[in-house]
Length: 185
Length: 234
Image 1: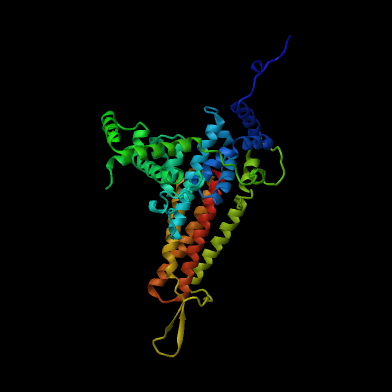
Image 2: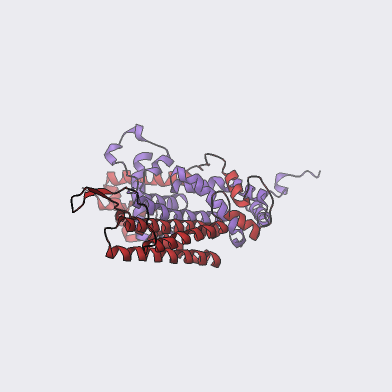
C-alpha cells in the first residue's frame, strides 16, 4: 500500500509559514502580512500588555506590526522571523516607555505603588492573577521581571536594553519577585 | 531584623552566586526557616512567569493595522515600495503625511514670523484676561495683567525631551523632512529669542508674556509633529 502516514508528510513549521509570508508581504501582499499578524499577535500583545498599561497595549501592538511592515526589507532571515519581530517589539516598547516616563513625570505621576506587605500577607482574598499582580509592580521592576523571568533575557542583555547596570537589573528582579510572591502564593 | 541573605536568594535560585557564596547560603538555608520559605516562594514566582499564558488582544487589531499600511480600510495587494511606504505614513495612526507636515511647517513659520513682527511693535495683539488682577500704582482702578511665564519651564522641559528624541533618531528621517523641520524650528527660535529680549526691557508687558507662551507652545507642537513623522518614517 502506498498509504501516506503523518511522518511522511512535510508539515510546515511556523518558521516555514513565516518565511513564505514574509516573501509575499515584501511584495506588498497584505493578506500574507495578515497571516503573519494572526500567528504572532498573541505573543506580541502579551509582551506589550506586561510592559505597559492595558489601555496602551493594543495601540502598541498595532504599532509593532505597522513598524514590522515598514521594516520588512531589513529582515535578512538570519534568525527566525518571530525572533526578529519580537526583538523589534521589545525595542519599540522600551522606546515608548521613555516618552511615557517623561509624560508621567510631567504630570506628577509615577510608578504604581506597591501595596504594603502587611496589607496583603495572609489575605487569600487579595490573591490575584499573574497579569494583575504584574500591574502592581513599579515600572522598572516590572520591565526587568518580564524580560528576565518571562522572556528569558540575561541581566547583561537587560542592562543593555534598559541602559542600566547588570547589578541594577538583578536588584530590580529580586524586588519584583519579592513583591509578586505576596500575590501569587 | 532584616536578614541580608534574603537579598541574595534570587541570585541563588538563578545560579548566579559564586561557589563560595552559594555554599555559605546553602548552610544558611539549613538553619533559617524564613529564608527557606522565601526561597520556595521565589522559585514559585519564577515558575509562574515561565508558564504564564498568552494574553490575546481584547479586540481584533488587524483592521487598524491594515488601514495604516494600505492607507485605506479594505484588504489589498500593493507593491511594497515607496508608494506603499508613503501609505504607512498617511495611515490612520499617523495622521500627518509629509505634505501635511510641510503645510503645517509653513503655517507655523508664518505664525512665528508674524510673532516676530508683532513683538517688534507691528501690531496690537488682544490679550485674554487670564491672569491676576493687581492694583495699579496710581490707584486709578484694577489693572488686569496676564501672567504667562508660569508655563515656560514646562514648555522648556517638553522641548528638551522632544528635541532629544528627535536628535536620537535623526538619521532615520528623510533629509527633506529634516530641512523642513529645521527651518521651522529656526524661525520659531528667533521669535522666542525676540520675545525674551523684548521682555527684558518691558518685563510687565502681558502681550509679550502671552506671545512668548504661544510661541513656545508652537515649538512644542511642531516638535511633536516631527517626532510622529519620525516614528512613521523610521
